[in-house]
Amino acid sequence: MTEQALYRRLVRRSLHRSRSAAVVVALVLLSLVAVYVGIEATLAALGRGPLLITPADAVAALENPTTIVLAGAAVVAIIGIVFVLLALLPGSRGRHEVPNERLAVVVDDSVLAGAIGGVAQRASGVAPSRVVTSVSKRRGAVTITPTSGVPLDSAALSATAQDFVHTLQPRPAVKVGVTVAANGVVGA
Amino acid sequence: MTRSNRGLNRGILAIVGLLLIALSAWVANRAYPVIELPAVPVPEGATLWIIAASALVVVLLSLAWIVTRGRGRTHAVLTATDDSGTVSIDARVAADLIAQDLEALADVVSVSSSAFRTTGRKRSGVALELRVVARRHADLRHLVDTVTRSVEIFDEALETRIPVLLHVATGVRASFTHEQRVR
Amino acid sequence: MIPGRVAISSRALERTVAAIAAGALRVPPSTVRVTLADEAGLLGVSVTAPLRTTALRSTAPADGIVTRVQAARRGIRAELTELAGREIGRVNVTISRADIREEKRVR
View 1 (cartoon, rainbow over the protein chains, first blue to last red):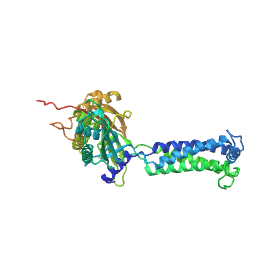
View 2 (tube, rainbow over the protein chains, first blue to last red):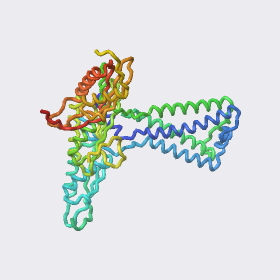
View 3 (cartoon, rainbow over the protein chains, first blue to last red):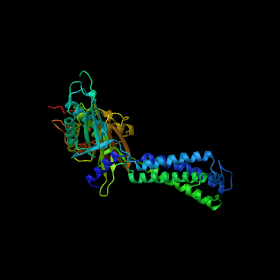
View 4 (cartoon, one colour):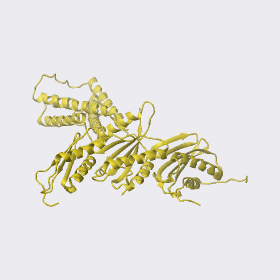
């Protein structure tokens, strides 16, 4: 594997959950059920009494489900849906890749948010507590609560923040906007 | 890195999930018939043995899968073997050197490292993962540039360039193994 | 060559190797772990220890790590052969930590 390809793989593994844990849970669950079914089937084949219910009774219970059996089936359906969702959902870990010549670099979105917010905060001149930043997969949003009587140019601040993001070049690309709240706070 | 195959994992989850949904849908259909499905005969004789054998196969395959899950972690970041013996450098040495180098950087809270075996067609090797916990509002550009420089110098010290993954994280998660507190 | 038998307990031998390795790697002997094993009749040695080294951005950087460890290993093998009078097999050295110190000029 070339180094490029290796770095691709390292980064991808870092950006998305591998679902290994979920698979282990699913297989353990499956095995427990299989063990029980196997035991009952073997006991019945040997002509002995059942552990809990005989295969015949089990099939009958499923063929003519009582409310309890239906409730159990509902639970099973929910578990199944959860597994399918886990299989389909991307499982992002909330990180972005930052291109680098020597290393593969991944950054937690909260760290990225802190950096972007810091740039907006310094450019706006308000206190850090007045700046709230969040970063999602493709968007960054900075909300600044201004000081009363000190207007801020949100377009200029957005451009400044976007320029900063540009120096990092996160993947997937992040488009950031700075919103200045309509209501400010009196005093610095 | 981790030995797991992402696509296969998701495939297994999808199959197991769909099986469970199908099973419960079938039972629901019995209570509130929507489509006509043949009745399941009571298992007898040979069928019972087939069921038992299948159950055993499922259990064995599952166990085999679970057991092969190793994270591919290794300790040594570099191993050189010759007739004289083996020289091996632990990943912790990388963390020690790089953590010390980052001490001057106020934005760095801790540095930890782990080594992973990398599988490949041509040659297998080891990759190093560096986890640097950064302070809130850290100067990200400066931090990444500094760590990059540290790694480049470490490349010279080690006399080899190994693949490195840098993960810049917040301090929320529980301690990594061998977390080196810089401050 | 003085005739007679020198009997060294394996524990004493381990500590001897540890002392030699500590000297070669320039670290405290208490930080050195040694395992000895038989290797088809030869004495196989495995050492796990830190390595004293300079900081990455030191103005007087030391040589490459692997080179130094291999040199240290040669020294360990030579000294051990002489001291213990045993045929040494493979000497494996694992560096577990970096003991970072600035080099002091020795006059």
